[in-house]
Image (cartoon, rainbow, N blue to C red; front, side):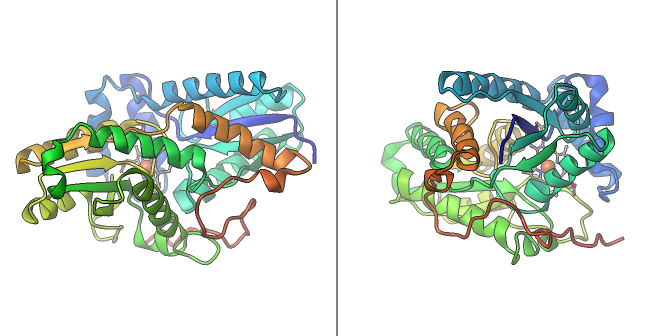
Length: 343
Ligand SMILES: CC1=C(CCC(=O)O)c2cc3nc(cc4[nH]c(cc5[nH]c(cc1n2)c(C)c5CCC(=O)O)c(CCC(=O)O)c4C)C(CCC(=O)O)=C3C
Ligand SMILES: [Fe+2]
C-alpha cells in the first residue's frame, strides 16, 4: 500500500480570549457537559489569556517530525489538523486533496484506546473526509502507542528528574502518582474491542514507567479533569482526593506523572500545576509534576517508526513495544462504541 502523506491530528485549543467560548462549544456540542462546568473551564483558559499551549506544542512537534523525516530520508509531507480548533481537520484534508494526496497515515496525539482518545479521532477523520467529498484522501490512523519506548522512556526520564527534586531523606514517605484524563465509567468499560482497554493500557504504561524509573517506590494510577454532569459516574479517585488520602497515610512528597498525555497542555498546566499543586500545598505535601514527551527526540523518532511499520516491506519486524497487552493496527468496527448518553 502506498502512502503519500502523514497528518498530525490533535485536539486543538484556543489562542486568544475570543476563541475560548466557541472552542468550548466545539468540544462539548451534544456531549451533555453542564453549563457550570463549561463556565469553570472557560475561566481556566482565561487565566492564561485565553491561550491554550496545545497548538504551539503541535507546531513544535510538526516542525520536529518534518525535520526528523527529512534527516532520515522519509520523503512524506506532514500536515496538521485539529478536532476542535484551527487548523480544523476538514480544512487540512481539503488542502491535502488540493495537493494531490491520495492516501495518508494519521498520527493522533493520544497514546491510548477509548472513545475520546481513539475512536472519536477516527470519527473526526471520517467527518472531515465526508465534508471534503469523494476525492478526499483515504486516511488511516496509526496504532496506539501506550507501550512504545519512544513514549515510555521520556516519561521515565521525567519521573527520574522530578524525583531528584524531592528530599532524598524522605524517600520512604515519597509516592509516585500517575494520572490520566478521567472518562465516564461506561466509556472505560467499552474501550477497545473487548472493553476496559483505556484503563488496562494506562495500568501497563504506569507499570512500565514505575519499573524503569523508581521500582522501590509505591505507586498509584488516578484520574484528573473530570467533566460531565455530577450524576454520571466517572473514573475515580480524582488526583485531589487522592492527595488527601496520601497525606492521611503519612506521605510527605509526591511525584505526579501525567502518563495520560503527550504534552503540557491546559489539563496539565491548570489541573495539575495549579489545582493539584494547591491541594498538595494545603496538605503540606511536597509536589513535583513530571514532564511529558513534548518534542523529546525519542518521541519524535517514534512517529517515524510508526510510519515505517506501515510502509516498509518488513514493517511488522520494526514494531517496538515494551508491554504485553494485545495491539492492533486498525480498530474493528465494534471498538469503543460510544456509550448511550444518559439524558
Ligand atoms: C480521554 C481524554 C483525553 C486524552 C486523550 C486526548 O488527548 O485526546 C482528553 C484530552 C484533552 N481534553 C482537552 C480539553 C477538554 N476536554 C473536555 C471534555 C472531555 N474530555 C474527555 C476526555 C479526554 N480529554 C471527556 C470524556 C470529556 C467530556 C466531554 C466529552 O464527552 O467529550 C473539555 C470540555 C470542558 C470540560 O473539561 O468539561 C475540554 C476543554 C484537551 C485540550 C487541552 C488544552 O486546551 O490545552 C485535551 C488534550
Ligand atoms: Fe478532555
